[in-house]
Length: 219
Image: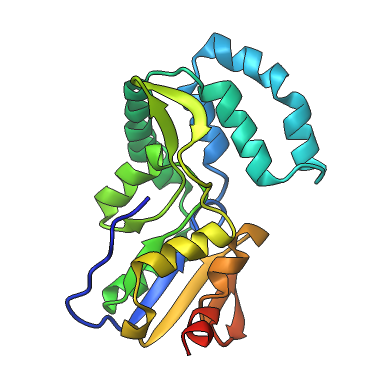
């Protein structure tokens, strides 16, 4: 998700933030799925998804496969309008309560000094897009596929994880227009995103200055 970010002037830096676990205290994806799934269906889904979730927690199944399975079982067939309405409610009532104060303060410092800031999570636009619009933040994230007014239970395009995060950022920003690049993440799914930056922060700790891959590739 995201539109071409056209810069009329050079910003100081570019700051790239993951969302779940980086800007928030906990994962928002399962909270939203529980919020949007009707109660009886949620009960049935909890049993159907138990082996998948257990495998993920044990490290046998990756997060990408796990999320795809949850979307397929829990969200398939839900009216798109219901998903969007739930996303609006979640963005207004839940997301603000989950923000990490220190991480949010770091993001605000970037904005205060005129840096470009983008949120690049693996989570869904259904609830992140309303929140980012309200905050005036650029967003690149995963989207649900819809057909005939209902969720198909599949993602529209690739999930915004790993290399896909870096691809979206490179497609929408001219790195040559920034003095420096910062990236913030908390899981291996953020590795490629963080490789774009000279200043990398992992789980709240600075990793030290590195040569960003994007600039190395562009010469």
